[in-house]
Length: 433
Image (cartoon, rainbow, N blue to C red; front, side):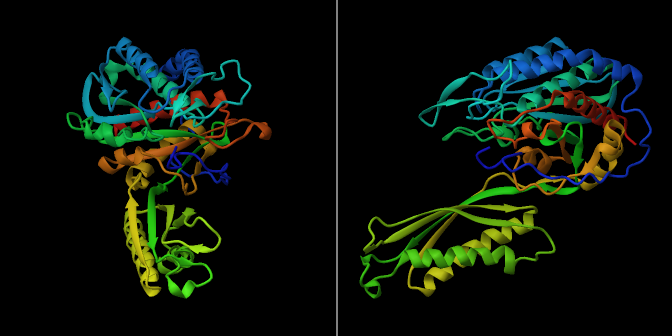
């Protein structure tokens, strides 16, 4: 996504160290439930391919939302549409009293021209930021939707037996809303999806370029917060041959860039959590012999816990302002909040690890920290949440590319694992310990 979402990073090398949980020999699902999963898999594959062939950008997922809503309605659910522009929420009330669990999938595609040779490859183009662009599910959200639709079919077929309620959240604009618009998880919550029915837990998954069928999860901070900053250094213009006659904002900006790097390396406790301060662009000046009045810098901040996030914001401002002041210049700092840290509730994650291990056995592993960001974080800040990664990498290494690549490819052998995992998490959570 524009903020580097669940996924604009290079392929992550995950060491396959199994997570030890209880009762690994139990079947993933009871035979009758597994039979329902098997029955729905042809539909899951068909949905995934259809969504992949007809991708839509954030806040424009009209066709996608219509297909999802029609499916949920056919299952007899209470369905609300048009949330946060195109979001869909289905509510499945079980036949027995119990807790509420929410399952979430994101729906939007990316302005990426597909370069994978598939019979259902996207040929869609659209206007984005004034340009004609290709559109592709380069982050795998087509898989997320199809998996959750499959889990909805399985669970709806067991409605009378369910001890509680399942909320199915299909969310637009995870990759960021179009410029000038709001969207995504934050807007869905602002429009009240947790007001009338507050879940006791929320689960989400993201496909990831690790071996197909592997599940990776970790307690606590999992994906980074993603904030942007801008710094305007105001100096005093002068001739390049007489720098003493003015105040050089380019030199000051250079000092600020170096000073910012001391925040994660020297000012924060490196044993607590990693953090990143990146300056992505510096703009200032027009001619080789003119020292300009001002320089502008923009960049991104990444952290894995809320306290560190606050500290970095304070230290970026202090560092820039005081370095500028030492040279007689000024620095105006603006920090724009992006997605919060995606943190898995430790108690919930520990409680559900046996469920995931039943599904994948020794293919359950601990996820590394991911410096990309995900707006699932907003849900997990409201109620206990758990977000995990599902491997979709093919055996052929030449077909393995990172999310957001025009060559991103998802091995469909992982789809049944996703349906099993989401179904099992819902059932086990509702049933309790």
